[in-house]
Amino acid sequence: AGYDLSGSSYNVAIGYQSLYSTSNSFATGNVAIGYQSLYGANTSDYIVAIGNRAGYQAQDVANSVYIGAYAASSRTITGNQNVILGHYSGFNLTSGYQNTLIGGFNAYSGFLTGYGNVSLGNQPLYSISSGTENVSVGKDSGYNVTTGAQHVIIGARAGFQLQTTFGNTIVGYEAGYASDLGDYNTIIGYRAGYNAEDDFGTFLGYLAGYNSSDSYASVYLGAQAGYRDWE
Image (cartoon, rainbow, N blue to C red):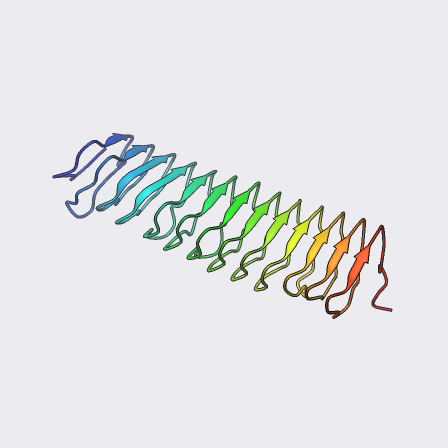
């Protein structure tokens, strides 16, 4: 633990190869607990890493928290001010910064370079890469978002197939589920806007606008309103 940290100070390292420096570097105020946690943390300051390989290869990073087995552990990390809690959460974090990821497999598969994302649950924002300022709460919510930005997605599998769109507010179980949804829609309700292809639409109610097809600024209010819009 704490190998080759000449010139470093105020660090705590517990576990085999935790806070293991690879370049005789300076590091200050770090806490590393667990096998290879903060391994290669060259010139990194004020990081808390707890768990097997948590924060592995955090280089020149500051003011971040990585807690959980393999949290933020796959790539060289250069982004600051991230809070990542959960096993394999933020697994491919690279230069992304000011992200808050809480839960297992959050933002797992994409090379996370985006900033300001907040996700809570199991596997929300699973595929995110350069997407920014998204809020995703619920199991598999926003699962396929990659470069999309400024979404608010709440509910299990809500916005599941969104990828590159912008500015949608989606609340409800599997609301706004399909991949062809456009930008700046407001969708609230159980499976509301499930197959919608709209831009600037408003969907409010159980199955509202369920099959709305390629519309612009449509409004559906009430249970099953516009359910068969495609016909």
